[in-house]
Length: 204
Image 1 (tube, rainbow, N blue to C red):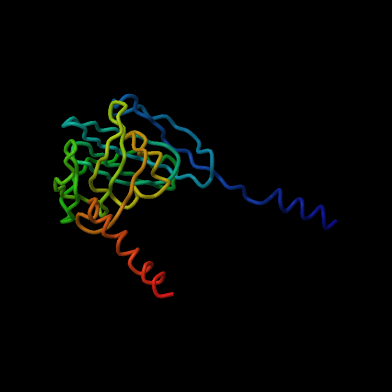
Image 2: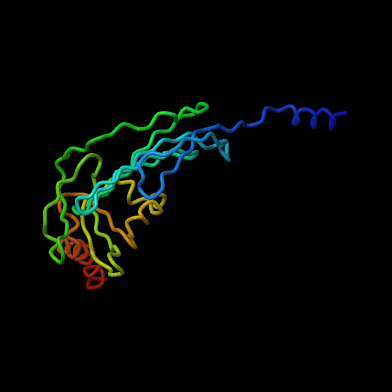
C-alpha cells in the first residue's frame, strides 16, 4: 500500500512546464526576421530578444533575433571593428514579442590602446560598459594580427567566447586600468612579479 501511494504521489506531482517563446533568426545581416512560436526545450530557458550592432570599416549592420535561452550582453571595440550585443529576458508565455529599441553608447572616461596597422599606440575612448582594455589575436584575410581596444567584462568570460567567433578572435587577454593593454605595461607587470621571486632565491 505504501509503494502504491508513493508511485501515485510522484505521478500526481506537477510537471515543470516549459515556456513557448517567439523565435526568429535573421540571415546574412538581413536585420529583421519573421516570428514563429516555439516551445523551449528546457524549463530553465527564458524568452529572449536580442539586438546586435556591428561596425566594421565604417559599415554598420543591425541584427535582431528572438529565441529560448539566457541573457548575454557584451561590447568589444577595436576601433575599426566594434560589436555590441544586447539582450532582454522574460519568463512569461510569448513575452519576447517586442524587439529591442536602438541604443547609443557614450564615452565612459576609460582609455585604452588600439592599433592602426602595426602601430598600436592610438588612444581609443571606451564607451558604455566597456570597462576593460583588451589585447587579442584576430584573423584578417587568413593573416593573424594583433588588435587592441576596449571591452566589457563579459567578453573575458568563457561563455561569451562562442559569440566572438564572428570576429575571428583566436585568443584574448583582458586587464583593467587606463592603457593597461600596452606591451610595456605587460613587461613591467612581469618584472614586478619576478622581483620578490629573485629575492627569495638569493636570500634563502
